[in-house]
Image (cartoon, rainbow, N blue to C red; front, side, top):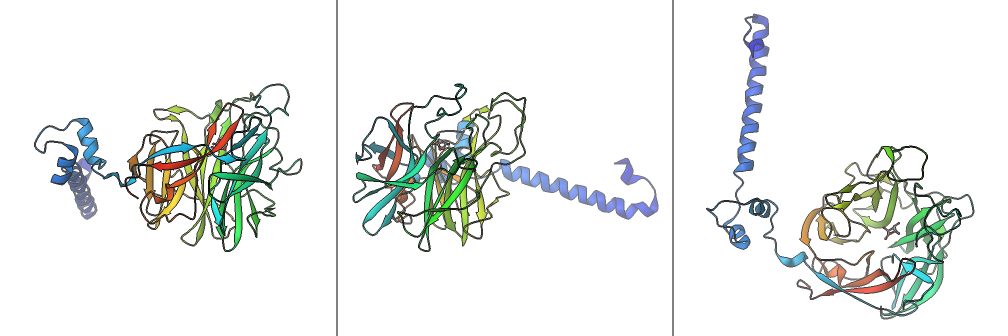
Length: 400
Ligand code: AAL
C-alpha cells in the first residue's frame, strides 16, 4: 500500500488506477463469494429433499442442494441379464467378449466381438507365447441373429497383422459405426511381445458390407500419450518416474460416433503408474476428433472428459452424448450426459450396469433418456479363462 501513497507525482495517476482496480477486484471477489454462500434453491427443492428450509444444513443436505439431488428418476434404471442361444450359449474353451454395438442390416442383427481360445497363463511365465490375458491372442469375429436371442457365429472379421506389424499380437474390443454405406470397425491392437508395460494402439478397418471384407488402415489411428516415464527396467506398470497424461499407457474401448459433422473417437485411457484413488482404479475417458474418417484423430484439449468409468457405452441424446459410466472411479455407476459431447454431468446414480455394453443402434435414442438401453449385449466372466456374451435388458424402465 505504501507504494500507492508515495508522493511521487508522475506515479500518482497510475497508482490511483491500480488502487481502483484492486478495490474493484476485491469487490468482485466479495460479491461472487457472497453469491456462492447465498445460493438460493427453490422451495420445491427443499421440499423434495426433505430439508427444513429454516433449519440447520448438514453437510449431506448442502451437497444434496448444490448437486441438485432433487432431479427426477428419468435417468435412473436397473438391468437384468439373460443367457443367449446358439453359438452364444456358453462354450468351454472359447472366450467371446467385449461385444460391439448391434447393428441392423435388413432384418438381421450383426455384432462384432473379441474371440480367443487357449488358457490365460499370465505374465512372466518364461514363455512369451503364453496368453497373458483372456483378450490376448484374440481376433475380431462377427455373429448374426434374427431375434437378438439366438446367434450364429459367422467367422472372422479382422485378424491379427503379419509379424512385426502394430497389430501382430492381438486385435480385440471392437466397436462398429455404419456411415454412408461403409461398415467401420475400430478396435484395440497390441504388438508382440505382450508385456505389462506394453502400450496398445487403436486400429481401424473398413468394409462395404457388414460381412466384410474389412480392409485395415495401414497405421493405427490412436496411440497413448508419450509423456510418462517408467522407473527402472522391471516389467512393472506401477513403477514410474512420471505418470504422464491420463492415457499415457493405454487407449482402450474405442467407440466411434459421427457427431456434429465430425468423427468423435471416444476411448478409455489408462495411465502409467496407475494409482488407487478414493474411487478405486484411476480410469478416465477421453475423445479424439477428426474431420475425415481415416483421421488424423486429434485428442481434445478438454481430455480427460470423465473422471470414472471403464468400457465405453455412449449414445446420442438431444443433441448431446449420454454415457453409462460403471466399474471404476468416484463417479462409477452413474449415467451422465454432455450437451456438447464433452462436458458430462451426472444425471443419475445407478446400482449396477452391464459391463462392455453393446447398444442396439437401431433403437430410437430420442424417445427418452434411456430408450437407447432397452436391450443390448454384454459379457460375463464364467471363469478367468472363459467369458461369454449375454443379453441385458432394462428392468422396470421408469421412463420409457
Ligand atoms: C475390457 C476393456 C478392454 C481391456 C480389456 C479388453 O473390458 O476395457 O478390452 O483391454 O478389458
